Amino acid sequence: MSMKKGVARGLQIGGGVVVVAAIVFGGMYWNHTRQYISTDDAYIDGRQYTISSPVSGKVVDWQGTVGATFAPNSPVGEVEEQSGDSTSTVPIPAPADVSIIQQDTADNEFVAAGTPLAYAYDMNKLWVTVNVKETLIHEVHVGQPVDIDIDAYPNQTFHGTVARIGLATGSTLSMVPSTSNNANFTKVTQIVPVKVTFTTYPTEPIIPGFDVTAHIKKTGN
Image (cartoon, rainbow, N blue to C red; front, side, top):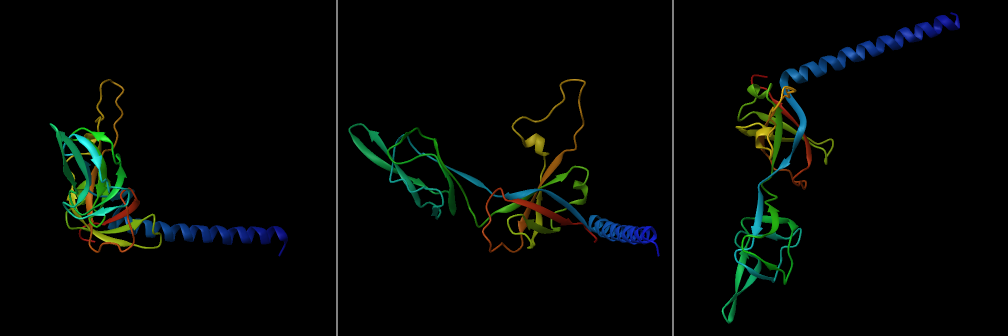
């Protein structure tokens, strides 16, 4: 066999392998899309608590440093207020089982009533928010199982279930909803936030904002 024929033969074999691989992976992708609604527009979410000053005065005995944890109603600190010729202290209670993720005050700072002093989450009750395209939301139902891939933990799959489907699109919930004020309107596919709770809470540490890829199992598959 000449060198040219050998090269041609090799190219034919290599091309055939590529075609077979494309068919195999194409079939796998089709089968996956038939069974799942998958998106990487998802993230770890949770209820954010704002810890505010109950009265006007000076912050004292502040314990709300980042990472600190508190039981419900336990004191995060106190506010010293002036009442005539006397002073008294008012406790700043924790709103739930929370961990502080951001503090905006320190001892001896004077604050007004209602001033946010810190922000916190219950790290044991986080969930996944999945943004599903409006064109696919008719296939999502409460109770559907979900496979959860967290970017921080590659090669692991966690599990959850659809707990709630949003009643408004993401743009409606944003600070400035997108609207058309002129003739140059471009239609954009909207997204609907879907809450997915863990069926087994991860033992690995997770925090709000972690990127997630979610695979929602379609009904009947």
